[in-house]
Length: 227
Image: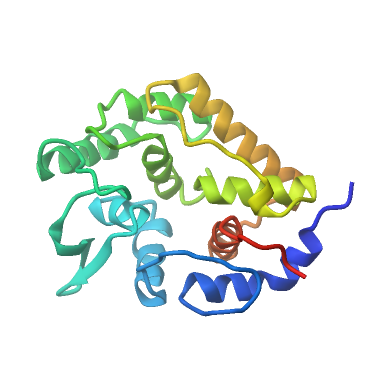
């Protein structure tokens, strides 16, 4: 089977430009990304490169990252997810969960499988509206990208590349509930399988990995085929 990967590689730079607000005529891509390149670089340098987490990495995943007096956190100090739903009863719920995860991570061996790590973080009792994708996001940062980040639109992009289809021809459902561990693991394993089968061995360079993540996320939003 021949993938559309060659075409994707050709337009990868354009897709990354779109991620940061650039415009191209084809295909029609409608995205909302309020995190500019400067903030994106700070998230990578301060957190991903060092295997660190705090509320900033959650705000980043929710598309609500802002900087105030050199401190990264939620825009307008509003702790809500990408759908505008609050994480828990109050801000302390999210902060306490992140502290529990940070402490638990010290007890997780480097050779643990994803399912074991995910179960550990679920057992740390995430707040309401902190779903599976947000938990995977924490694992991504804590593992310094050893475990790839997950996003529905990136999943659509990979599936479309593997099937030689345009992204708008592909269906990927929303992530399962965070406590449905088997379904979460199956979803994530399918994503990893597609990554391996479309792109082969992953780069060990975090910047390369992030550029691929960005390009896939944008490509998954394409509403027309590339010519």
